[in-house]
Length: 438
Image (cartoon, rainbow, N blue to C red; front, side, top):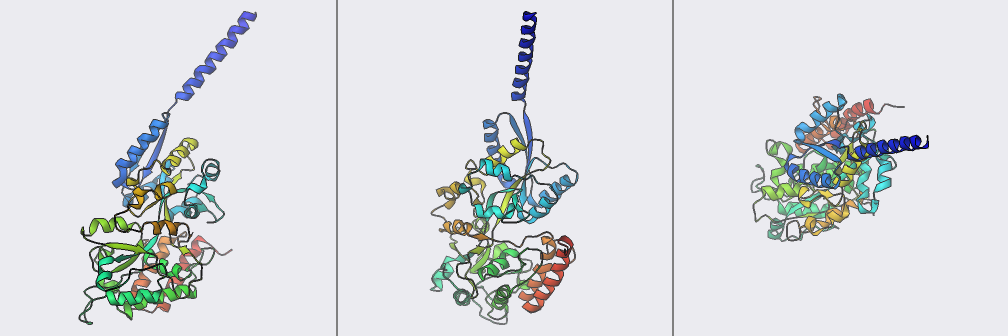
């Protein structure tokens, strides 16, 4: 009898052992979607490294052009077929989090990450429902911030000192006037000191540099304060009074990304990702620098608010492989990622990578990439909301939104106050649908 019991126990243990071995050998397959095919080969190499370190996890990677990425992944979300891991835009984040499409990763972040290794201020844009106290539903792998680009040769020829951290709007305007070349006031200038139009990376940086706000504190309504109005008036005057920036109608049909690298303007405010664009489009002798957006006359002392936004990675709320997906995400945001996979001007979220000599690229213009990292330690703010693409003017709704109203200001077709009125009325008609009055 005892022999029979012992034999049965042995069989049970053997079966359990075989099951455990089989379980340990079971392969998990993750689907990962990314939106930048230019870096697909480097991303695949990184995935291969991950698979080598995690032999039980295989990753099927799909890289798509950004223009086709969102239509396809949105359709997959509707069909309940989201990949396990995928790139997430700040512009879509809140809607996707609200719709329950993203996995809450806060406990995983708390468990596994040393927050001090990352630009934690950038995390705020991936918190929901509150940007400061909410849980994380995605995590950045890179981020960008606006800077003032300037042509060094043009400054040198005009006998001007390069922009400094203590530059004011008056300093900026004085330089823009000296950098503008216009032989006949009846005709467009041969060269402008600056260029702006109504898009978010051109406008909001000036608003925040003056401690202004476009939205209410809850980010549920358009609510321009006086500091924001002052910033818009300053931009309008650059074009319509001082003539140091071209009206929007003058550059229609021209890629705005070309104006600075092709030497048609001396200064330009836009996202730091344009460093790569400038290097590719400008001639080899092109010399340029970056500086902070100058502080406005009404800026609150000590206010370090700047406009920055992340490119993030999210995990589907319906993934069947939560832990494996998280292991992949941790790997993709860590120090393993090669610097070459970051477009110049996009900052790695991991401080170790961002502060490396490879990212700072000493010997290349701009020679003060450290400035971007310093801005990442400040307070970030964006105007992204539910319905942002509608009220901003990017959605196919028949309205040009805030973009179009500010372009009219640039063209001298309406005043700043008229634009603010139109933006507020239309914008709040959109936002009321997404954030009903309680």
